[in-house]
Each structure stands twice: as structure tokens, then as C-alpha cells.
Length: 531
Image 1 (cartoon, one colour):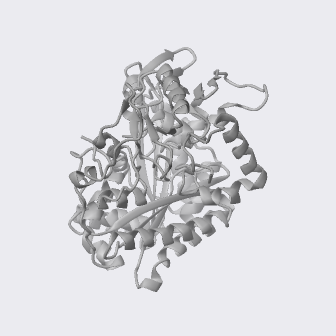
Image 2 (cartoon, rainbow, N blue to C red):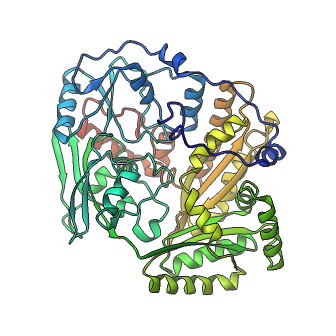
Image 3 (cartoon, rainbow, N blue to C red):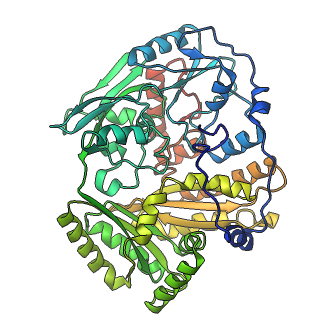
């Protein structure tokens, strides 16, 4: 069963290795464990619904609790403390586009706020109901998860928007295809959510980001459906798919998604290479990206992330042997781990591997084969579960991300890390900070930073510390040529910095679009745009 106050299935547990608490204790101090609320305590705080009865709407208290928060750090703290404060008045479960239209008309009739809800994995405050004089209805698309059509000749698949990652892949793989979109939230996040938030998957080098995969579909608006037909390419004016991509529920509710799929590859392998230092590692990954080596995945960990990953990997004896081998080959303190994947036919993969090795050799790359790469692939969707283990040990972990041009990657990463590392210094607190580049382009790269800190003596202290760190890092990103989000979307948490990126005219355009599609401000108010 899915956790009501955290990530994923209750039966999945990721534990810190024996030396994990010692490693973190040496870097940020001894853990500080806070008490968790129980589900029963939270249920007792759920108020009566303000909604009239409707056959598609549940007013059950536990259903409302389970759809009240996402997975951001403030959401996590609210769930663990039991202070949700605001709940949706009901949760609807449409099973067809017609059901969505009925619910939207009903919402307009009864002056109800609507929050589209996919997998509940938002880390930017997309799905949280806000205090309002109007009742709030969360619109869960979970029951619209089927593969509706597969055009094998055109390789276009049509899905309901509520299909999560495993549902998408299992239905396609049964027919010999894959979407190839694997965000870290893949286990729970949904196809409609990927489109609405401009998601990026871990193997986007091969398959493309969601904007390359999104071929068309249907957006339900208060005036009726907006149909987006599929074309291989078109010069017929602006591409209306861009109105839906990244719209975050402000313009309508996605009821159908058409995506470009690929036939399953014959072979897939993941490899790990260690480079002597960050300077050479950064040059190496830029060379690989700009040479257009046909890799399916490329992830570069900086020195601190490399150290942290090896320290928390478990099996200290094996890691010690690896460290000795790497030191012998010239990859000592300050080394950086590069993980990459090849996907395709055996002939294609062999050629890609030879090319990657040849390009990495001048930078001092030490190739270690597939063992570490296979471990990454095996555990790549388990990192969100680590938050539970760290919390139980008395630590808070969060992430933030951006993207920028290659000429700015090193400088921006350094400034972001410094803002976090020094962000609680006046409290005498240390923050453990590390970064990887996980999506690379010819022009530049994403920057994905993780930070671990102590919560303090109370939930209020923990939230205050997060707010300080998040604000400082977001200011650095927005004022130093970084996008406020490469893959998580804007939501409410990033909305204050969107005007710096879009400018006055850009924001006026988005606001005009919201008024056009939703003149009554009924759809996800406060998300994307600060209403």
C-alpha cells in the first residue's frame, strides 16, 4: 500500500548502510529525530466537506488526506508532523474524457476550484489545496491509465493521462515497444503529469525529453476540448502543443496523450568511468555531448557526490579494493564518477562504447566495466525512498535543479553549492552538498544538487532552515543564467522567480492565456502564476 505520509510503497524500505550515520555525523553533526504524527491524528483534523454530493466525487476523510500534499520538502514536513492545514473538500476519479467534462461543468456550476492530480509526486507545490472561500476538488486521473491505441506503423501510442511509469511501460512492452521516459519519480508519476510539467527522463539522450515524445492529445477546457492532432512536423503557425507542455493545469485538464514510442532495443548496458578531477571530468562530458556520441544516458557526479556514493554504497571491503585500483590508475582524492548507457543493437552499442572510450581516454578516464553501472540501473528509482532512512536517522534531504550553458555550468554549480553549504552557518549548522550533471546537451547541461542538513529541535525549525536554503539557492540560480527548473516544473515553490526568467511580456502572455482558458480562476490557482 502507498504511504500516506511519504514516498512510495510501504513494503519498500531502503536502509542506510552501517556507516551511513557515522559518515553524515562527521559532516553535519549527530542526527536529530523528530516525532511523527499518526494517520489517526491527521484524520481527526479533517473538516467536513463543503461540496455537494456527486457520484464521481469521494468525500472520504482518508482519501482527502492522501491527495492533500505532494512530495516537496515542505509537504514531507507537513505530513510527518500531521499539520496539513488545508485539505481538498473532495477527490474525483473520472474514468473518461466525458467524466472530466461533466466534472468541469459541475465545478463551474457550484463555484468549485479544481486541482488536476496525476501521481502526487510534485516537488514544487503543484497539487496542494490553498485556503479558499470556494470549495476545492482534486481531480485524480488515476483511473484513466489504459493504452487506448497503438499505431505501430507511425509508432504513436495513445494513453489516458493517469498512466504511471510502470503502467506505460508494461502495456507498451507487451507489444514490443517502449516510451523510454524514466524520470526518478517513474514508479508513481504519470504521463499527463510529465507533459504538464515538461518532465525529463534519465535516458533522454536516446529517447528525448517529454516535449520530443509528446505528439498530441486532448486538453479539456471550460469551453470544450482542445484537440492536438499528430504530425511528424508542421509549419502551420505556432505549435499548440506548447500551450499544454508546462501548463501545469492552468489552462485545462489533459484527458488524452499521444506519444512517440520506440521499438524495444536488443541490448542495453550501463558503464562507470572515473576521471581524475572535476576540471577534466567536465571537459570530458562536454566533449561526449558535443561529439553526439549515441549514448542513452550520461551522468557525471562531482567529487563530493562520488565520495558520498561510494561511502554509502555498503560493502566497505569491496569499495576499499576499488579505491586502491583507482588510485593506482591515477584517480585519487577529487575523482569524479561518470556513468553512461548504450542502448540499441549489439553492433550499435559496440560502436558507441568504442567511441566513448576513445574520447574519454585523453582525459584520464579509468573504465571499470558494467558492475557499478548495473548497480545504478538497479537502484535508480530507489533514491526517493532514501529520504525515509535519513529522516529516521535524524537528517533532512532535499534536491534542487537547474540548467545552463556549458560556459556557465562550473560557475553556477559552485555558486549554488556555496549558497547551500554556507546557508545555515549563522546557526552553527553545516550542510552536506553534492551535485551531478544528469541531462546533457550540445549547448549545456542540467545541474542537480542534493543537500543534507539537520532538522533542529522542531518542525518549525526544519521548515525555516529549508526556506532559507531554498530561497538562497533559487536567487543564485535565477540571477546567474540558470533556469528556475529544468525538470521539476514551477508549481508554487518556483513561481516567485519565474518573472526573472520570462520577463514582463512573457509573464503577460502566460497570464493572458490563463484568463482566456480559465476566466474564473478555477484551475490550480497560484500554480505557475502568482495569482
